[in-house]
Image 1 (cartoon, rainbow, N blue to C red):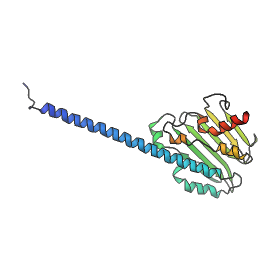
Image 2 (image 1 turned 90 degrees about the vertical axis):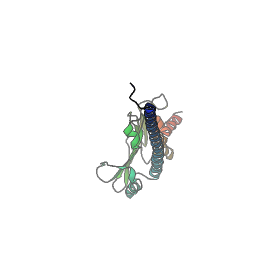
Image 3 (image 1 turned 180 degrees about the vertical axis):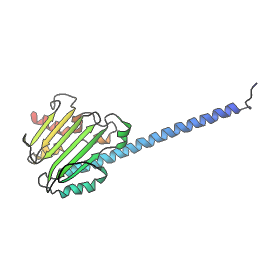
Image 4 (image 1 turned 120 degrees about the vertical axis):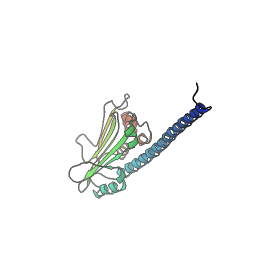
Amino acid sequence: MNVWPKGAWFGLTQRRLRVAIWIIASVVSLTFVFCVTTIIANRLVARDAQAMLSDIEKLKVGVSPSANIQSLAAKYSRYRAQGDCGEGTCAVFHFYNPWLIRIGLARTTFLIVVISGKERLSFVELVMANNRGHSATVQWMVSNPQGSYEVGSKVPVGVARPMLMLDVRFTPEATADQKKAALSFNTECLRSIKGCEFADEMLPQVVQFQTASSR
């Protein structure tokens, strides 16, 4: 004997269908909002990172007063992180999209900047890396026993991919072109959701400069 009122099953199915449609629509809407928010956040981070690189390029290690460090700390305060640089004035900055870190997307890329000095700016270190451990590191220092401009990598520059790590050290005696190449990090790595996988993508101008110089 059928105990269901006439049309009750059809009504129940309709309600379930409406609930399912509402759930699907909500998930799609939230996904869309998340994607748009992530894209906007990435662009802001990349824009600010590029602006800071431009500001750093105007400085002179061994010459610029340490007050410039505080100026940068105030200008980019939203990216300032905790860090211990020993004595003197120091500032550490971390450019990244926290949402990408939290959801664990492959090749999430970030940029860390360390600036320090006592009376004068004495050291700048920039590291662009991803969550696979591939990185491009630049150190701008007062002096270097190895020379005014030194480049090292796990894979010889211009020989083969993938280049997992790239290290650059330069001093005030480096040429203007060498300095420009060393500070020309690819901020598109921060803008893109997929990030950059290899070191020569993070610091392409250094690779291009070395390749051209070796010819």
